[in-house]
Length: 113
Length: 114
Image (cartoon, rainbow over all chains, first blue to last red; front, top):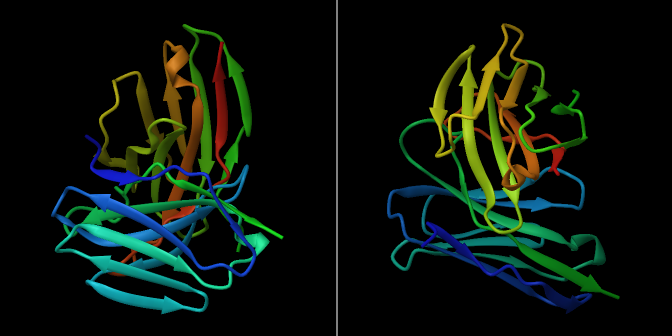
């Protein structure tokens, strides 16, 4: 069983919809949680990161962490065609370096006009 | 500020050959990490270099190796290539200057093993 599970999709939604992306994890040592966006033929780019349980908002994006359930979510409001990409959750422990991230396999999102 | 650059962008090799991939981090970044991305496994951590020393290593066989130079540029080598090594190899750098360090990824090198 993988340490981080993520539904690969694809997920297709109409423009303006609210999108919910989720990951579950099994390692309770994970303390930092991140969401990356990856466009085709590009490297991942960081969208949001959180440390504690609860919600964190940045524009149209909200990241939610529930450590007790080992579940994280990313919500995208008013989705746009430009949001079409693969979304990757990533996490790491509180020890060691910041560089060893454990990723989900990614969810491909398609926002249609 | 220029981003992380990787060369070459695309590579085709045959089984048994070896390959060297190159990564130039963002100026001032001393930490370079390598990841392998495949459709089935997603992104998997290979190793991290900091100040020319390997600081962390993932669960990959010894055929995968790397090094870092004094200017922080890094190379990754895969010897005796197997079909399963076909993947996107991503390099990431970070500044190591804060409690949380954002990793900046390059565009990747697409390796195809025939």
